[in-house]
Length: 495
Ligand code: NAD
Image 1 (spheres, protein in one colour):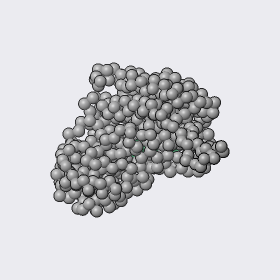
Image 2 (image 1 turned 30 degrees about the horizontal axis):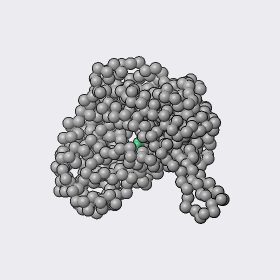
Image 3 (image 1 turned 30 degrees about the vertical axis):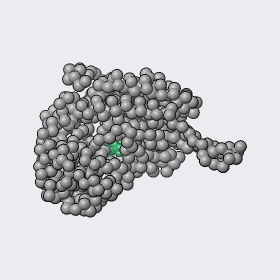
Image 4 (image 1 turned 45 degrees about the vertical axis):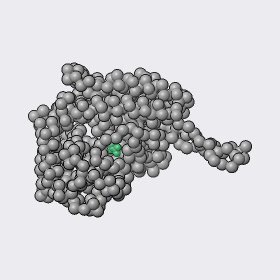
C-alpha cells in the first residue's frame, strides 16, 4: 500500500488554490483574501487557501440552515442517508493515499500513520455511523394505560464543527459521521494549518450524493470564521476539538448568542504510570515511547507525563532515551519515517520554549531538546526526554503538544495517584502493573476519560473518547456520539 513511487508522484502534484465549499459550490473568500499554505516538510508554500470572512461564514451557515429546514437531508429515510454515506466512505477509501499525502504535505504527520489514522479511519467512521443510523429506535415510555408516552430522537439542526490540525480527517469524521447520519447539516471549520484534506473529503461527500448545503466548509482564521460560528444564532450545536483557551471562548460565544450546546474535546497532560511490577518493562518502554513520540507528540491523548516507580526509574528512562534516539525523524512522506514534522514554526517554537524553561530550572534533558534537520527548511524536533521533573513544573502541568516527555519518579501507589490527579486535565492515562487488584484500583482512582492498562494508545471506534475536568465535556466515537447531535422529544398522547 505504501508504494514510495506513488507517494512521490502524489507529493509532486500541484495543489490547486483551495476554496471554501458553500452550498455545494467551491468559492473564494468574499474579500478575495488568500493565505499561503506552508508545508512543515520544507517550510515552502504548496498552495493558497481562501481566508474566510464573517460574511463567508454567515453564507455557509445560511446554506446549512436552508438545507436543514427544507428537509432535503433530514427528511430522507435513515436508510437513504445511509446509502449516500456508505458511498462516501467507499470514495474516501478509494482515494485513501491521495488524501493522506495531501494531508501530510500540509500537517507533517508521518505517512504510515496518516494513511491508517486519517484516511482509513475517516472512511471507517463514516461507514460506522452510516450503518448505525437505521438501527436506532425511539422509545415507548412505561406510562399508565390511559396515555402513550413516545420518545423521539430528532436531529438538532445546524451543527458547527471546529477541528484542530493534528488529525484533521480522523477528528473531522468523528464529528461529521454522527452529525450527518443523524440528519443534521454542518458547517465545518478546519484548522488554519490543516484544511486541504478536509476540503477534499467534503468534495468526495458531494460526489457521493450529499445534497448541496448539507456539508459546508469554511477555511481561515479561528478568531474570524470560528468566532462567527460560535456567535451565530443559526447554529444549534457546536462540537469542538482543540485547546482549552478556545473552548472557553466558545462557551462565551454561546452565552452571548443563542445558548447553543457546546461540546468540547480538549487537551491533556496524560499520566502514564509504570509500576515496577509491570508485566514486561521492555514492552512498557516501547509502547510508552510510541505513545509520546509518534506524530511528534501531536496527539491529544499523548502520554506526556511519565510516572515511574523509583526502583525501575533508571532502567525505564534509559530505555526511553534509547527508543527516542532510535526513532527515525524526518520527511513524513518517507514510509520508513517514525516521526514526521512538527505542524508549524510557531508550534516548534512553543515546544522548544518548554524545554528551555526546564533546562533553566536545572532539569535533566536526557536526550533531544532541540530543532533538527534545519537544513531542510522544515520544522523537525528531536524526541525529547526530560528527567527529574517536579510535578509543579510547567512542563508537568501544561500541554506541550510536541515530542517532549516529562519524567517524574514516585515511591508508592498512593503517591502515583496523587501526582496523576494533580492536573487540571483528565483526558487519558495508563497504568502498567501485573497486579490485577492494583490495576482496577488505579482505573477507579485516576480521574480521566480513558485509562489504559498495560498498553497505550489502543482503541477503536466502538469505545467513546472524551475527557473530564478541563479536558472537555463531550464524547467522540461510539454510539454515544449520536447524543450530541440528537434532541430527545417527548410526545404525550391521551388514549
Ligand atoms: P486550537 O484550539 O488552537 O484550534 C482549534 C480550532 O479552533 C482551529 O480550527 C482554530 O482555527 C479554531 N479557533 C481558534 N481560535 C478560535 C476562536 N476564537 N473561535 C473559534 N474557533 C477558534 O487547537 P490546535 O492547536 O489546532 O489543536 C491542538 C489542541 O487540540 C491541543 O490542545 C490538543 O490536545 C487538542 N486536541 C484534543 C483532542 C481530543 O479528542 N480531546 C484531539 C486532538 C487535539
